[in-house]
Structures are given as structure tokens and as C-alpha cells.
Image (cartoon, rainbow over all chains, first blue to last red; front, top):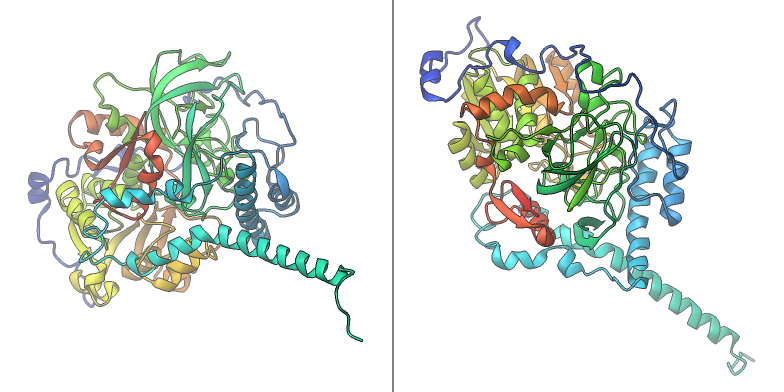
Length: 199
Length: 379
């Protein structure tokens, strides 16, 4: 009880715990814990360099402006492309990791990338298929009702939002296409030589 | 080669991609034999981590066979069976030389606050991951280890992240003999953290979650007391009550960015991406640990801000300890525990899924269907 000096007693002593739980206390001594102390200097890492050889930079690799230089090794997956790529480059060149704008721009680029990539994939004859890509058909063999009903799960309150998130890019694209067509039709009507005008 | 690719929030597919090539003299190309989907992959899958690009291959838990090595590789050769830590690290920078491999400064051009992680967005370096037939492994002389002949392959996969991260969570708690330890989250990392807390001499280990089947696993695998937080009025009051009003000595947040239990927090982070993560578990940890207690955070959060109850942490004089686990540092000790039968990491594997069906694997894991705890991918 915190109102007095003694710590509340435990139900089981160390001896009882050692007997009941395999391995109890084998790493009780901090010396047996690999990450103690936190910083433990070593040169025995397998590295046979003081500074690694540099990986060739095959395109202007975006990097955090908090780095003094491009790191000697870096990932080359998915170079920035399109409008989303331009936003990513701007986020890296203009803002440090400490700026909220840096991360918000990257998140915006992620959303635009999804739209761009969906269109690009369609044009390349490999359209996105929300049915197979969401894995929704696995519901049929993964006990969807038994997994959810009567299980005291807290996440059921927000799971209905998931399809909205998945559908959002298509809804946005559909909305944009509708607005574009509507605007073009309206313009063509305005420009029609046969349109009756008020007199 | 066949590889999983990200197509947008909640959508992945398997595509034909070019086999990765040697891009640096100390690279290796590894043919993946087994990989796993990690709970933190779900943060990417849900579109929560900034700079997650369409087309990226996820996967930071994998083992395989070395296919080719770069010109400067000395410790590995083609045909070696290897396990690869989720950290990509150089072994020589300021941080690596202090064994903080998860904080390597030489591999992530995109961020200084994050080390390099396979298949974990450009925020973690822009490296493709191991949910594919082949993967590029930088610093092959530093990261991977040959899989011991006696080790089960599924144990090896679990040792590339989930098991050491859970163990590290207990280590960060600086557990002393008889300490009361509360673990938030009964996913893979939480299960390993609970199990490891006993190894470090805990007097009580209590696991909190909302999924009954995972809590049952916490009993059978980790010998823990369990609480389903949806079944108590107020989890903080309940934890205080069962610790005689004092609170726990150590709380471990093994949930991270997608914590449930507060609708507003969850929706603003996971669905609306307005926070780096839903800090429900972390706030519960802050409020349920005793004054001057220790909080260990091994659940992953994104780089944006989160609505953390820092005033309570300040007023209670808490020590909050965090980091990405430096996996390789833990291997010698954990190998001993596995060999001696103290740990059997593959006991938590619940699903084995072919790579071609990965979209279904992600959905089952994400929606917590079919009592899914840990899905493994089989190539």
C-alpha cells in the first residue's frame, strides 16, 4: 500500500516462481542482459572499414537536410516520380525532420501517389483490383462472425471505417472525373452556335 | 521474381519485379525461404507511416539462402543459410560502435531520427523488404548470421525481430527481482516481453489486451495474469486496485501506433493520420505505473506527434525508455535460451501463408480473424 513504507507482498515467492516458470530469473543479473549497459563500445561488429565504401548515386537521391551528406549506403526502392515525387523532393529539400510540414507533405504525397499509381497501373494494363488486393475474400474462410461476435473486441467500433479508406481514392477519382465531364459539357453547351440565347 | 508490393492503404498485391542486384561491394542477395508479417507492417499497410511509396515491398522479418555476394564480402558465401536482423546497419558509425545498431547513421538517407529497416518505407531508408523471392541485404559482413544447424527455421524467423524486440522491452524496464510488470498488448512482441519479464525475475506479469484469444495465449505461452480492458470499467483504477493502490513497477508498451481503447485517439491516428500513433497504451502505462516507475516502449510509433499525457509522466517522476531493438546484440543470449529450451519463439506462429496469398494474410492479420497471432510466409 503506497500510504505506508512497505511494498505490497507478492502472492508467490521467488523460489515458488523459479519452480513454476521455466527460466525464471536466468537473466536476473543485469550482466546477463545483452543491452546493458545501453552504450557498449565495440569494434567487433564484422565491419572491416572505418567508413564504408560509397554506393553509387544513380539519380539525385533525396535526403534529410539534417544529414551532412548522403549516407554511404541507401535504399533504391521506388524513386520519386510524378507530382507525388515532386512533393517528396520538396519535403526533403525544404524542411528538416523537426518540421511538421516535412511529414505532412510526405503524407500528402503518399495519398497522391496512390491516385497516380492507380491511373498508371490501369494505363499499363494492370488495373488495381480492390477485391483481391484487400484480401477481403479471406473473410470467407477465416471465421468472420466467430472472430468478431461475442469476443469483447474494442476494434469493432471503427472497423466499418476501413472500407471508406479503401474506397476513398476511387471515390475521389470518380468525383474528379464527373466534375471534369460536367465542366466540359457545360463549356461545350456555352460555345454551341445553335444554343438559343436570351433576347 | 515474385514480390509483394504496396498499392495503397489496405491494399497489397504480388507482382513480377526485377531481382535485386548488388549495389554496393558489401551487399548480398538473399533468396528468401521464410518471412513474416510483423504487427508494425500493419502501420505501413494502413498508410500511417509517411513516405510509404506505392510499389515498395515490405518485410523486415526473413531468413534465406545467400544467392550472390558483393566483392568485399568476407564472412558469407553463396549457399549459406542466413537469418537477417530487421535493422540495416554499417557496424562502424558512432552508434553501431556502441552496439546501437538500430540507430545506425550510415544507412538511412531519408531520416536521421530513424535507422535503416528492410521494407519499412523511405522514412526507414527506402530499402525493399523480404516479402519476396529475393532481397538485397546491405552490409552482409555485419548484419546477417548463419543459421545454426540445430535451430528450427521458424524460430530463426522469430529471432529476426519479434522475439528480441519483446526481450528488449523487458530489458528496457530494468526489471528487478519481484517487480510487478504490466505488458500492454498480447501480440507477438507483448507475448515475448511477458515471457522475458519472468527471465529477468519479475514477481508478477500482467498482460492487458482486448482480444480474448491473444490473452489466452499470454496464459499458455507466457504464464501471465490477463486482463481484457473492455471487461473492466476503468483499466487504470483496476490496475491500481490489483496492485494494492501502488501501481506497477514497470509498464511495457508493446502496442504502439494502433492502440485501441479510446475511439478518438485511434481514429485520429490510424484512420485520419493526424497523429504519429494512437498513444492509448502509452497513456495507460503512464497512468498505471507507480510514481518513479519505469515505462518501456517497444511498440512502434510514426514520426508525427502523438497526444501523450506528458504532464502525468513528469509529475510522477517516470523514466521512459525506448528504442528500436538492436537485434544482433541479443542473438548470442537468445540463441542460448532457445537451445536450452527456455524460449520456443515459433510457438506463437499461428498461420502459414504462401507468398501468392499475401493480400489475404494481411487482411486476416489486420482484421484479427481466425485467432491470428503471427503469420509466416512460405516461399
